[in-house]
Image 1 (spheres, each protein chain N blue to C red):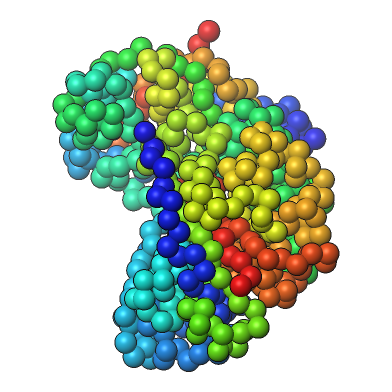
Image 2 (tube, rainbow over the protein chains, first blue to last red; image 1 turned 180 degrees about the horizontal axis):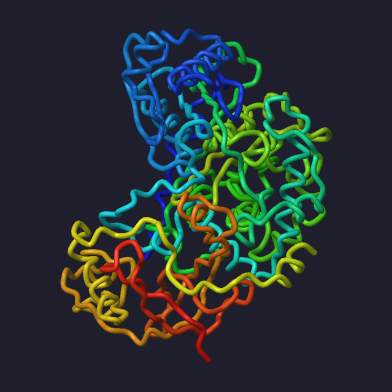
Length: 394
Length: 160
């Protein structure tokens, strides 16, 4: 019943990422979320070589507490021409970039900012139960009475089923953890920089069996922002020498998404749909991609991503990640050279876009040594809804 | 290695519903969810079924996602099913889990025999969580919650 996506890519190369910025990442920022947002956006504008006064578009995460009016006030925005809120947390990661590109392509604004700013450790912890004690309806009422109260509870159902279906083991997930941490060990922004071994992963405590502690992303404070504009404007800004373009974007849901766990088959990701649309719009395939930014809320979903986007056949990601050789920064397909949500910081996926930009600029702290990075895929698998973007050198 | 070691240490089986966790407010839930909880209260597992195309559905919705009929009934099902997936929670994310020392506990996704893909979330009692496996046959049982005895939960026990 699913119809093919229109064979149109109206955003192709119409928007450039010209600035990236962030605050430090921490477990207690000691300041307001408005201050975090303002600092990260100012840093991104500095990187781009524009003034925050020039911002005329904002794409925020619906979950973010910073409303447009607050940022107009704080940043001295003179006229906000365009704004959007993208729903969900991880599901908005990458999606905000696609929305921003479409706003630029449509001519709604000249300088658009995507941002995410939150004290997700010192204030609202997403990993803790957030249900009301008496639930007035909806999926929570059919889950929380049985103790299913956190994202790890729902998403780990996928992991168990995946292990059953394809024979993947905790050690396979461990290789992802080891690789991401090794990348983070070179990244001064990263919260977790001490290298780990597969044994460390296996000996870390079980949190939601089959997930160990070292399968699970950080809960932290911090903010990230990116600035986008037209390629013509980009040629007159600070990073004019490295044009970084949004080539294609896609979002997808799959069926039966409410409550996540009721989908027809939870050993595959909803993002198989997103992947099909992305490749068809971009007229590209897995062999065109030089590096991967995977939304790594939990390590197993890096394997889901490899399969959903067609880098390996279904069931073979476990073999691809084993030993870490293929996915290391100097391997065939580097994953999360910044360390990802797992070891750098959890800013709902926006840091992944930033790292894609660094790779294209050639300034990642885990820059692949033997090849130029011309094209990066940033995507998510097994979120409530998923999104992806391809970012390329112009 | 560690996993194998963990599996050799059997945790105590769950014997009753979790205490202190969030529960549905039966006064405020929407009309299209009520039949599920009324069924449990009467020791019956009732699943929403479309009157137009006879398709079962869970989670409950006002409209049939297959044929878009607004008519449905609450059909008593056998309560037999198999484990589709499960997790063992070993870290408390809610104060009541910690305070009442309710770790570990299992959350299990049960596929009911009436229809492929028809699944509900529950707990399996009377078995160490380490012994639960995918495709394990289970049978429904009912228990009131301690916190709100009018809320009766459908729980499962191993069957063979």
